Amino acid sequence: MIPAEQKIVQYLNEAHGMEQALVRVLQSQIAMTPRGSYRNAIESHLLETRSHAERVTVRLNELEQGRSPFQLGIGLLQSVLGQALAIGKTPLDLVRGTGGTEKVLKNAKDSCAAEALEIATYTAIERLAGSVGDRRTASLAASIRGDEQRMLDRLIEELPKLTDAVLAEETGRRPLSRSSATRPAQSSRRSRNPAKKAARRGSNGSKPTARRESNGAKPTTRRPRKRAASGPTTN
Image (tube, rainbow, N blue to C red; front, side, top):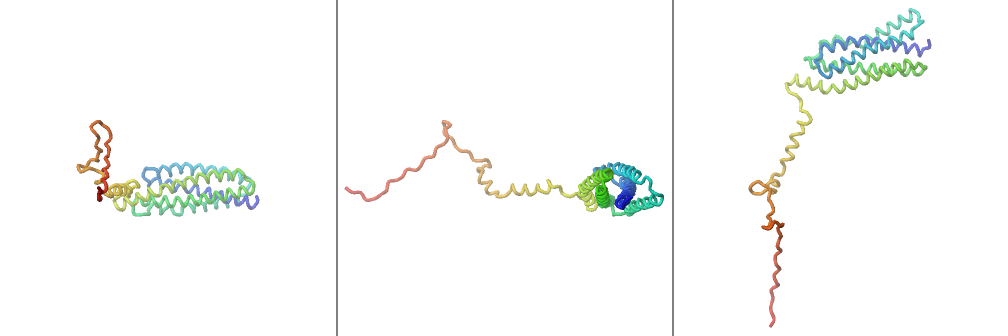
């Protein structure tokens, strides 16, 4: 096995260990997360993560056929290293924060970091595999990387809502929505220039109406007659 292929196997072992560890991390997060869109996201990603671990295992078995017991032992050590990277913070997930909503928010931020690490790992695997013509491994890495990127995007979308929940728990109030925040400005804009509004209306508060002639025709305006210029008269 050439050095580049050995590096592919090393990275696959690390990725496999990360996937296995993240299964346990996601399970612990689901247990403390209230029902809602964020919990739905991590529950669906738990299924994806299990699938990722199985797919990487299949590919590793194909690549490691004929390897010596020593090399297999190295691969196991690399897998354990990947697990350590993923679950080194797990005990903190269970006790951190002052309230339940803050724990959920911090877990979401940690999940963003974990997803970014996985994206970097699978990007490197895809690049290495493509450089040596290993299309199967490159395709596998690209597929899993796409799942991790979609999960990271979804987590980032959830962060504002999780932050609002922390604010509500800490202060006892909810932040203003965009519509309610703009409504006072609109009402104040409408109330400007009250004198102009009063001028447009009649004395009884209704809009003035034009007078019509008795025959229904539009009123006509009479122009004042011009007076003849006064001056001395001649006989």
